[in-house]
Image (cartoon, rainbow, N blue to C red):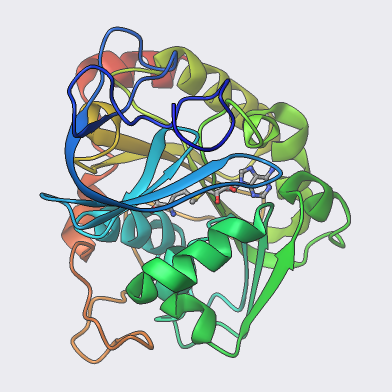
Amino acid sequence: ETEGDTNKPDGISSVIPGWFSEISPMWPGEAHSLKVEKILFQGKSDYQNVMVFQSSAYGKVLVLDGVIQLTERDECAYQEMITHLPLCSIPNPKKVLVIGGGDGGVLREVSRHSSVEQIDICEIDKMVVDVSKQFFPDVAVGYDDPRVKLHIGDGVAFLKAVPEGTYDAVIVDSSDPIGPAQELFEKPFFESVAKALRPGGVVCTQAESIWLHMHIIEDIVANCRQIFKGSVNYAWTTVPTYPSGVIGFMLCSTEGPPVDFKHPVNPVDRDDVCCKSKRPLKFYNSEIHSAAFCLPSFAKKVIESK
Ligand code: SAM
């Protein structure tokens, strides 16, 4: 064991020396491994163990409680999809709320949208913000946008206090439902999200893997169908360093002007659209937007039956 909470894994493997292995009850019987060049940071916040290491294949890696949150090489797939799937589905988004996402990557992507006037973020753990600014400047660059206002606190409590109908879009960039993010997967939280959205507003939440977590996805879909009276959809993408190599998103809209998520109306993939970092989009485009909603038959059957 190294520094930090000894009851929680940090993933530095006793299985393969010199490798990080992602061992968790969330994916029993499997553990994706990355070769470690150097451990750059290890700390314990009030909420979780925080670690950064240099990998040989994916650049720097941010790990919370033994679970990979992002790597420099493939973070684009996740950040671009969780942001542009909702924001490109509505015309002129103005007010956006991000829950979680302390690394700043979602902020970086939201800032590509010139219609946006206000970007609020509520992250529970200040250490994630500080560590990202220190080790992942190309991700934390999102904080440089003057439209961004950072609130350190619990996203559940933050949303409860939001006046009804405030946001055009809410993006829930959470960790897995073990630890501080647990409530972000529960029905009362989705109810507060719906209340915080304007009519025809949209939410996109991190919604786990169709290979590993169909039972969690089923519950989320069932809850969302009860709460969101516009539309309820599941989309997914590839992120090689996430367990099973894929991650899903729940995209819902509230009653009001209809939102057809499968056909983006607000394209962001023009050559002239750049965020502060001036990095062009690496992953998202309008074709992959529509394709993200095509599901394998086994998942389609379950999701459509809910
Ligand atoms: N953006 C990332 C990526 O590229 O994959 C991954 C996830 S992000 C680091 C998840 C964040 O959600 C963490 O920083 C965690 O502290 C935060 N979080 C967990 N529970 C929360 C809560 N209840 N309220 C606000 N933030 C929370």
